[in-house]
Image 1: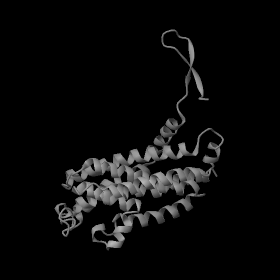
Image 2: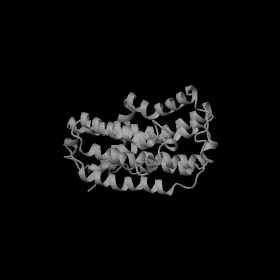
Image 3: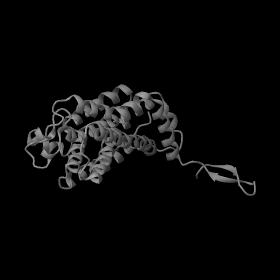
Image 4: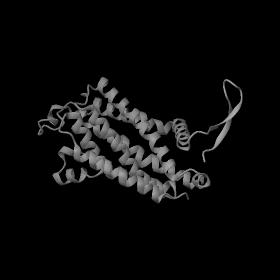
Length: 271
């Protein structure tokens, strides 16, 4: 039964019962306030992607070169334009695989989750609240990074903006599904950080952060297609450059979300 509390009717002044705020919405509000109170968290989530992209565009000598001179489509965009989807993937990975699991493990280590286990709050709601707040923050961060890059670096606008947005959102949910598996079972902040950072650096490799995907060997590119952040970079790049609709990589991202999120809820431990 939903908790209720009395309020006065505006016309009669009589008191009646009104439903209390829904648990998920209440958790989202709490997590949003905690997010905004931590300068380090919101800086690396909201500001760092735009700062990184701007720094690369202004100081790297390759920024204005063709992204992939061997490809008739990718050769029409600059290297910094082609690197923009990579930075967006990096932003997703930073939040989903490092900050988020460590935060949840910190709750577990400090006994916050054990106290919550005595309430009607389901693990799925707690995980969902964290994911919703962080995905919304990443949408803001992505918009800020693209806006700054367009104005300062003359980065080309996406040829298929809806495809890029869809790929970015699916990438966020896929990465958070992977991060949720870590968050569901890591007993301490240190454990969550260790596992999360391992997944983070592997993901950055397949996302093309260290070396652009078009220049990697063909077998590596094929493997990257089935890794969340590799699929994300390929899908966003396709939408940015106007390549054919990236059905395969978008299906891969959706599949990761559909498998990892329910599994994380099933494996979740309060303590």
